[in-house]
Length: 67
Image 1 (tube, helix red, strand yellow):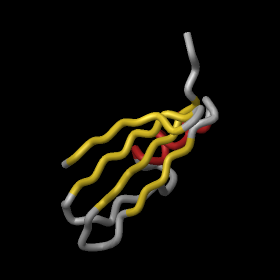
Image 2 (cartoon, rainbow, N blue to C red):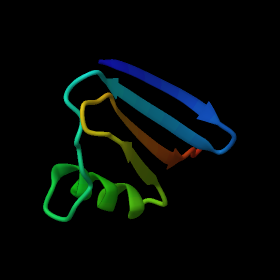
Image 3 (tube, rainbow, N blue to C red):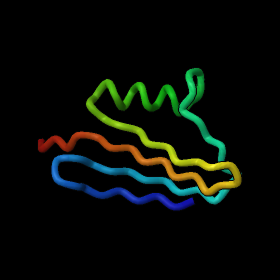
């Protein structure tokens, strides 16, 4: 697996790559669905690209807030 985090304008991006079996889903009842819901509650976004056979890429986008 590989993880990258960066800032893009007023957003923070987190991307995870996995060379596993693929087939991950954001269907209701899955852990990824719950994560997508939590990100949405703070104006975030979750994008999952996981074709059968892999690889899987999960990207989370969150608002950047200066302290």
